[in-house]
Image (cartoon, rainbow, N blue to C red):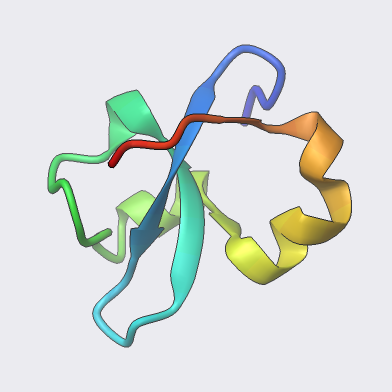
Length: 59
């Protein structure tokens, strides 16, 4: 994952867990599929490393 070049947005999986995922890699606007999660970072983990992700507010 190229954290310095990708733009991330906040998404949820089927269980409601929040993730930051590259905007261009997610096909659904609201939910992340199991295979897309491989390119994502859990929101709780990203909070500790917030300076390393370029996060865009999608809404």
